[in-house]
Structures are given as C-alpha cells and as structure tokens.
Amino acid sequence: MKRSDFIRSTLIGGTAALTMPLLSRGQQAQDKPPAINLDIVKEFVGVSHGKFDRCKEMLENDPHLLNVSYDWGAGDYESGIEAAGHVGNREIAAYLLSKGARYNIYLACMLGHLDTVKNVLTFNPGLLNSMGPHGFTMLHHANKGGEQSKPVVDYLTSPGAVETRIFFYTKA
Image (tube, rainbow, N blue to C red):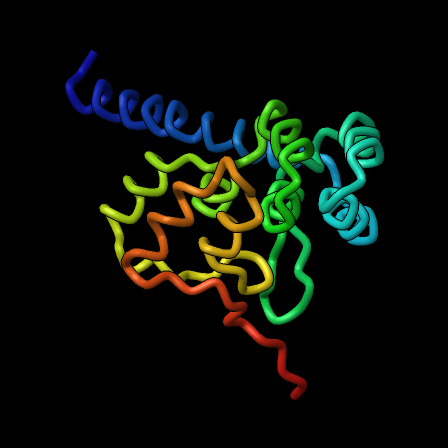
C-alpha cells in the first residue's frame, strides 16, 4: 500500500470513527420522551409543598417528574424538592432525596446540614443572602427547618444573613 493510500484510508476511517458517536448521540436525543405537560409539572411542584401521598403517587406514575421545575413567572423556577425545602417539609424532602432529587444549599439549610452550609459559604461568601425559589433566602429555609436547623440559623445570622423575602413580583 502506498503512503498516500494509507493516509487517505486512515483519514476516511478516522472520520467515520469520529462521526459514529455523534450519530449515536443524535439518535438518543430523538428517543427522548416528549416534554412533560406543564399542568402536570405545576401540580407536582404544588403538591410537593405538603401533600406527601399525592407527591409520591405522581412520582411513581412518572419518575421524570423528580427534577422538573415550574416557572411561576419572571424566572421564579421551583422544583418539588425546592417546594418541600422552603416550607420545611422534611418528609417530602427526604422522600425526594431518596429518589435522587437534586440537593442544594437552601435544602441543606432547611435540613440543618451545617457543615455543608459552612463549606459553601467559605467557598463563596457572596451567597449569604442569595435567593432561592420565590426569593426566599438561606436563613428563611433554615428557620423553616425547626429545631434541627437552629445551628444553621445561628451560623447564618452571625455574618448578617436576612430572612426577609427579597424578591418581589412586579406587574409590567
């Protein structure tokens, strides 16, 4: 085989090898299930605030609901775990976590996970008064966590955390 033929066959074979994974990924994207109906997403997030039985039933019927978020308006996105977190519903939060829901700093505050909160704020102190769903801060979530979250409340208040809801809806 001539050198030029070898290079040509290597380039053609190499190109095919590179494009095959791309075709496979494109095929996988086509196999995705359709988007979840927004009314169902809204209901799931709504019941995740406090209706454990309905939350569990809906998730069992459609596991894709686990990490969906609903936009309540103006980019105020909320998932089921975040709904449970800002109202202090430990039962629903624990259930959703056991199913693999995404854990975040606001949930850590509600659950009283002081070491996590300290680590995140040491890494980025600017997050102290950042806003979670509906504009609720970390301190709000920690206060909703009750007695188990008191150490987090104490930790957050020492550097000046605020609990007040600092995100307000405005009509255009």
